[in-house]
Length: 243
Image 1: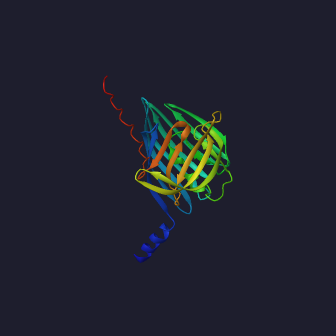
Image 2 (image 1 turned 90 degrees about the vertical axis):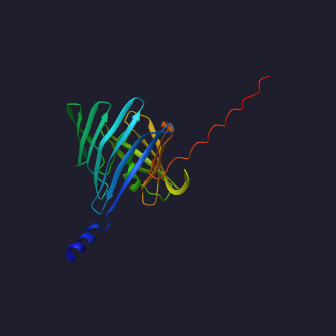
Image 3 (image 1 turned 120 degrees about the horizontal axis):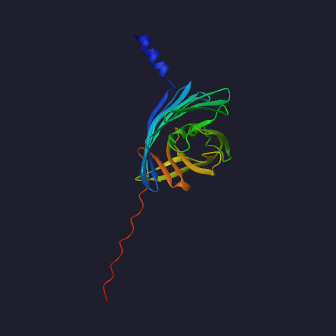
């Protein structure tokens, strides 16, 4: 019994696991939520979760996003399933020998696609889920201000370069609290033909994403327990007395 208990303790040393929830605001209004788990040990990292969004009249659901990487942050596989309105879409991607092999299914049609990628490429979606950037939060260096270069494989599309610049530690204000967080500015392309997008990531010392902002798209995301500073209410217009 003691040996079994000792083995249990030893086997769990070094394991990092945490449940997370991001609330995403578009134009200042909450429109999406992401619930996910990050599990990390000496052998692999696994990030998995779901997301739900209401964008205009369309309901978007990330039914599954399960990413597995090895200890060197080299992706092994990603299993992604989404529902856009009534349309079901899935991608099952395996990574090996510098290639990403994608079995993509839209409705009842399945197509195979193969892309050449860097072995340690990041794996993201073009939009949701934003929690896929958690791997970059682990990998980006907070020391120094020189640009850091990465590559990101956008599921269903291909690989594009990513540039990260550390802005150091900032005291960030939230509703009812402040926090000292590492600030990273990330520049990337959501598609090969698209224009570069700039996003700001604020992460704590444990490399947990606390806030994400994409200013050009009026999008912000906040970790559970944090919220945006409320905008001041517009002053009431004084009623002028009739002449």
